[in-house]
Length: 120
Picture 1 (cartoon, rainbow, N blue to C red):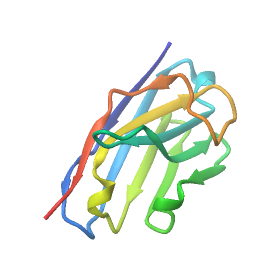
Picture 2 (picture 1 turned 180 degrees about the vertical axis):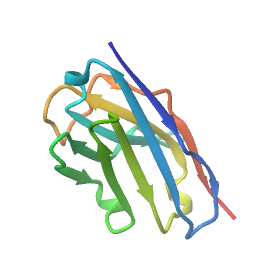
Picture 3 (picture 1 turned 135 degrees about the horizontal axis):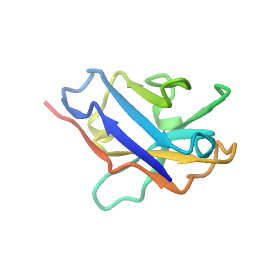
Picture 4 (picture 1 turned 60 degrees about the vertical axis):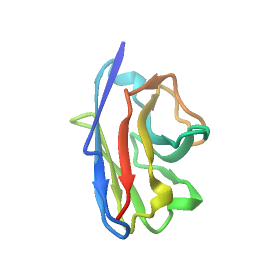
């Protein structure tokens, strides 16, 4: 069993920064790849960033140069640092975990989601 808990969302002005955290618990071996997805109203849930336990990363083109992903394996926590935020970054952000090494596809484990709103 895997449990993912996100924290750090909120309201920020355009151009600002925000950091998200996702703490994982349960079967450590089910957390090889962790990452973030986001879903705006009426849109599908899309990949934002993935990171493996070894530090390999993949970021969506829309966030490259603005967002970064990192993780602390000892704490089983993944972080998403979001800079130069734009209104189109507004969405519910979901933490995801996969027992496989897979930078392309979502795993079966999801957090409950956390709202990020970019607005003046």
